[in-house]
Length: 179
Image (cartoon, rainbow, N blue to C red; front, top):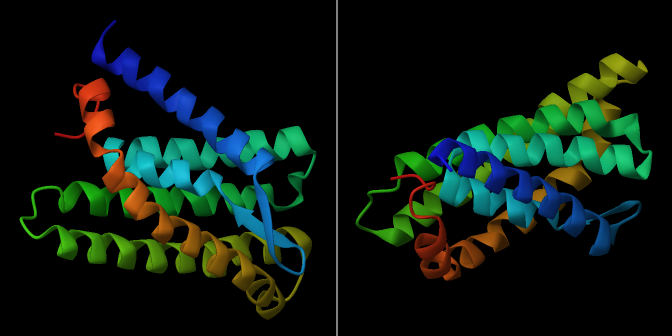
């Protein structure tokens, strides 16, 4: 199998894992919102496979999750927001790959997670929902602030998971990972 075919298959497994973790492990935190543990998978894919895989796992993962649960109402903004997060975090992971000081790399990735999640949930998702549902932008920002906090926390907490998976993933997927 060529490297690109393997990477497509690995990314498809990531999408499936995103959906499974989002469906099976729902930890409620706010009024009608839970920690979406699929973001652990998205973070790992951004960290090891780059922005395209991170965007694909996050975007298609949300679409499939929403199709399975029948909750298409928030899907367009959520999926587009995940593209922003995947692109930003994946590029940050790629650009900081050769840093000698790993603590600085992880601080920058954490900062990229917080900033991109804020942009994705508070701006992109809110704009899409304000347009689609003719609701005031400030109302959408207030409602999506829960998503911003919960998703950013899950992704930042996922960074130690990324570090701990280094040996296993490098041994198994060395050709498909970012160089």
